[in-house]
Amino acid sequence: MDTRVEIAKGVVLKNPVLSASGTFAYGEEFSEIFDLSLLGGIITKGLSLKPKKGNPCPRVFETTAGMINSIGLENIGVDAFVQEKLPFLGQFYTPVIVNFFGNEEEEYEQVAARLDVDGISALEMNVSCPNVKKGGIEFGKEPDILYSLVSRVRSITRKPLFVKLSPMVKDIREMALAAQEAGADALTCANTIPAMAIDETTWRPVLGNITGGLSGPAIKPVALKLVFDVYQCVNIPVIASGGIATYRDVIQFLLAGASAVEVGSASLRDPMCFISIIEGTAAYMKEHSIESVAELTGKLII
Amino acid sequence: MKEVRGVVRDNTRVAHDTFLLSLDCDLPVSRPGQFVMLQVACGYEPFLRRPFAILGNQARTLEILYKIKGHGTRLLAEKRTGDNVNVLGPLGKGFSVHDGEETIVYMAGGTGLPPILSLAENLRQGILILGVQSKDQIPLLSRISSLPGVELKLATIDGSCGRMGLATDVLDDVVCNVSGSVKIYACGPKGMLLATSECAKRIGAWCEVSLEEFMSCGFGVCTGCVVETTGGNRRVCREGPVFNAQEILF
Ligand SMILES: Cc1cc2nc3c(=O)[nH]c(=O)nc-3n(C[C@H](O)[C@H](O)[C@H](O)COP(=O)(O)OP(=O)(O)OC[C@H]3O[C@@H](n4cnc5c(N)ncnc54)[C@H](O)[C@@H]3O)c2cc1C
Ligand SMILES: Cc1cc2nc3c(=O)[nH]c(=O)nc-3n(C[C@H](O)[C@H](O)[C@H](O)COP(=O)(O)O)c2cc1C
Ligand code: FES
Image (cartoon, rainbow over all chains, first blue to last red):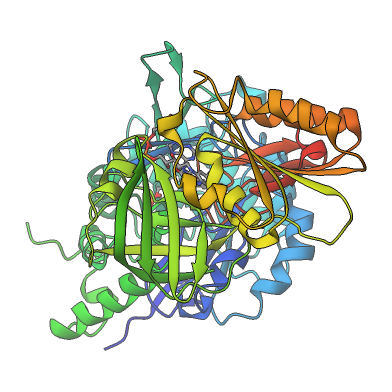
C-alpha cells in the first residue's frame, strides 16, 4: 500500500493530509506537540507583501459544528516569513506550501517573486481577496479577472502554483477552468463561506468586522459538492478544504475527486487530529486493499 | 504544551454556580497564570475547547475552578467521577515572579479568582482583594481565608460580606496604607483591570494583568484572540494571558 500523492510535478506528499492555511500559523506551535514530518505537507498562514494587522476583535465566533472568523489575514509579511520562519520549517521532512495574497495584481506578483526561494515546495494563491483597483470585487469571482491574475503570477514563479478557489461564485467550474488555463498546477476547493453572526441582546453584529467566513464540519457537505463539480471539469489535481475532521471525511473527499485534503478548523479544537486522520486513512486503505490514493480519487460510484 | 487525558476524580459545587474540578492527569509542570483548554463536548456541540486557568497542578492532579456561563461549562458540570476530559496545556505565559521588598497586592474579580489564587498559594505573602456580587458567590472561602501569609480583603456589590462596593475601592484604600512600594497582580473583568492598571500607574507600582479573550485554539495558531498593546497585536493565549498592565491599550 502506498499513501503517497504527487500533487504537482516534483511535489510528493507522503500522505494526502495537509495543514490548512491560517489554522497552522508558521508551524512552530504544532511542532511542540507532534513531529511535523508526519504530515503530508504544511500550508502556512497567508502572506502579504507587508505585515498586516488584521481586523478588530472579536474575530472569531463559534457556530453549530464550526466557527466564523474575520481574522483579516493578519500576518508577518513575506520578508519576515522567509527570514524568520522558513529556516525553522526546513528541518522537517515534508513539503512546505506557502499561501499568499494581495490587494492588487502587482502585490501578488511581488509576493510570489519573493517566495521563489529554496525550502518552498509550492505556492497556494488565496484569491478570495478584494481587488482594490477594481472596486473591491474579489479576484476569485470573475473568470477573466482570475485568469489574468493567475497568468501574471504564473509567469513570475517557477514554483508549482495552487489556486485556492472561492466557494461563493456563480459557477465554480468556470473559475476552475480559468485557473487551469492560466497555468495553475492544482486547485484548492475551497475557502471559507461568507457568513455573519448577530447578537439579539445588543442588536449588533458579533464580529468586529461585521462579517466573516464560516468553516468547520458545518461546511463539509458544501465543500464536498464543490470538489465533486470541479473534479469533473479539470485535469489537474484538486485539493479539498472544508470541514475535514476524520479519516472518513478524507475518504469521502477522495471519492468526490480530491487528491489530497487540508485540515483547518478541526485542528484548532483537536491539534492531534492530524495524526488520527493520517493513521485512519492508511488503516482504511489497508483494510480495503487499496494500493494507492489514485484508486480512490474520483471513484465515486453513481 | 501537551495533549493529555484527564479523568474526573471530583467535580463539586463550591458556590452558587461555581464548581471545583479535580482531574487525574499527567500535565507537565506549570506556573501560576498558565491555563488549559478543556474538551467539554463529546461531539461538535460546542465545537471548540474552553479555556480555564490552572488552579493547582501537583501530584498528577489538575484543579480547575469554574463558573457556569453557557453550554460548555454546563456540560463540564455534568461530568462525573471516572469520566474523561481531554486536556491541552499548559498554555500561555504565567505571572512573572521575582523576589523583591514590595508589598504584593492580588486583585481578583469574578472568574479571575483561579489564576490569582494559584499565584497567592505559590507566593504565600501579600494582600488578596476579592470582589464578587454577593457572599454566596465566594467559592473556597475557607481555603482563601486560610492562605498562609496572605491577608484577605473582600468586597461585595450587595454588601453581604466585607466592604460594600468594588474590589478597586478596596485597592485604593490598601495602596494608601502601605508603606514602601507595591506590586499588583490582577485578573477579572476588563473594567476592574483598567481601574487597577490606572491605580498602578498613579502610584508608580509594577502591575501584571491576566486577560480573558474568546479563544478558539488557545495555542497561538489562529490569531483570533489578539489584544492591542504598545508593541502591536499580541496573542492573549500565547504571549499572554498575563501582560504588563502598562503595555495594554485598554
Ligand atoms: C485564559 C482564560 C482563562 C480562564 N479561566 C477561567 C477559570 O479559571 N474559571 C472560569 O470559570 N472561567 C475561566 N475563563 C472563562 C471561560 O473560559 C468561559 O467562561 C467559558 O469558555 C464559557 O464557556 P461556555 O460554553 O459555558 O459559555 P458560552 O456559551 O460559550 O458563552 C457564555 C459567555 O461566556 C463568554 N465566553 C465564551 N467563551 C469564552 C472564552 N473562551 N473566553 C472568555 N469568555 C468566553 C461568552 O462571551 C459569553 O458571554 C477563562 C478564560 C480565559 C480566556
Ligand atoms: C482562523 C482561520 C484563518 C484562516 N486564514 C486563511 C488564510 O490566511 N488564507 C487562506 O487561504 N485561508 C485561510 N483560512 C481558510 C482555511 O484555510 C480553510 O480553507 C477553511 O477554514 C475551510 O477548512 P476547515 O473547515 O477545515 O477549516 C482560514 C480559516 C480559519 C478558520
Ligand atoms: S486562540 Fe488561537 S491564537 Fe489565541
